[in-house]
Length: 271
Image 1 (cartoon, rainbow, N blue to C red):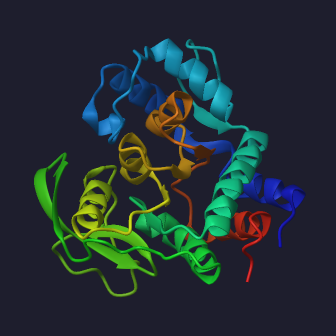
Image 2: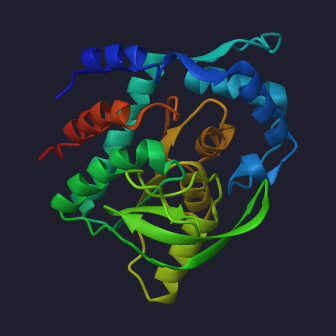
């Protein structure tokens, strides 16, 4: 199992932390849109307080290690690997607590081509520990607003991880699912679970709309987030999200597997 030292080296080598692929321009654009409460970047969160652009820069500097200088407007963004490691430890604590209580869990991703394997490993570990891995509303149609207009997707689960598929068939050899920031999939899943009389998840693990949408509805929610996605970090600051791990979410899928092994080991869920 990777030690914290090993994982820190991996984070930097894979550019999941340190100098990352996300640009400062992308991050600042997201902060401006969030300050204007654009639903595309709120991704299911309804902030309690007013967050200006400078407030968001300060928050992201504190939680992720990006530059706190509002005059820094170009180049690649930076994530402090020590903050990533500390957040992974907090993330592992939430998984360990869920396993001790034996609560049902719900996992979902808007980044299936990148993070499906990461979440699937967590699902396997939690299932082996006695947690029911929920798959509510499987096959349900969900309408999601995209930059191309309203599109219909199907909610599906692969290895216990929720995702959405487009109407067109996947190319052979590709991991299934579409990229989305929408909270509609998790809202659909949670509503279906409630309508069926439960069980409801004691912990939701996911990214983008999965973590923010669940946290906004009062479910304990944890997950990773990139520096151009301020919503999960705002949710954590306001108490709607329990743990957020800062990392680049656009890297190769196999780069995230050492993180899953580290978290499972820290949570005493290694098989």
